Image 1: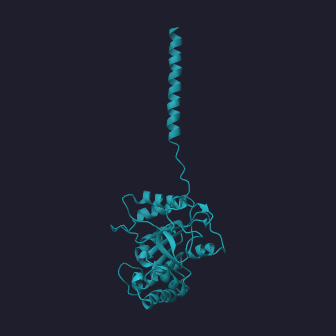
Image 2: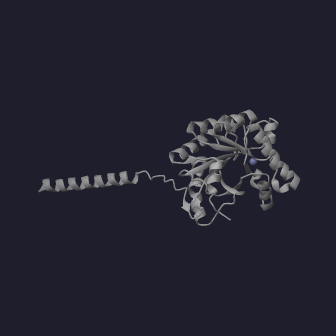
Image 3: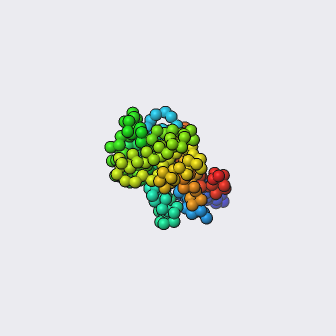
Length: 275
Ligand SMILES: [Zn+2]
């Protein structure tokens, strides 16, 4: 009798241990990080366009640390993203080609030298394409901290598109039409002469634009223009006001990066972003 009580206790104890172990194992199953950031809708595939500036250790929000940038590129690779060029984006929006799954256009504004010294080796490591919008006047003047035309040319031949960010980086809404035309046309011509091929894309300095400016961008011969309006690009986007997702240095740069790129399409699907 005594012996039987012992075995019941023994059995109950084993069952409890197994249940507890099962609960622990089950709760520790890693939640799969779904690549949910690219949702399809009636407006077609949503394209993530990332916007960086500096990649270095300067303590400003526009400067993402190289090690954080590396982690972010690794995240993109591990989650099945495919980097694309502005031409690939344009052709897909025009309906003349299709994009790979989870397309991402990685862009940098201003043309900082650290894009060459810090970002370029990391992009090469992952075999990623990217686009740099350069301020042509800064490159011409060898302005300290900015790319040289030699560095721009080298990258341009190796998967990094060099495009225009105007001549002087002046806020476009403050310019006369003549000044505006010169910023648009002269930067395009200068970059084309330095690179030896057509330059068809521009990013608005400080992101400011209006319909009149967009019309002048079109007249200057650009195929598309990028803003800093937060959102993803799809067929409903204005080709001369394409959305981007800016990436900043924050308290938790990499966590914020994942939240920004993963939740953006969800916000959009509720109509919270596009206007
Ligand atoms: Zn800029």
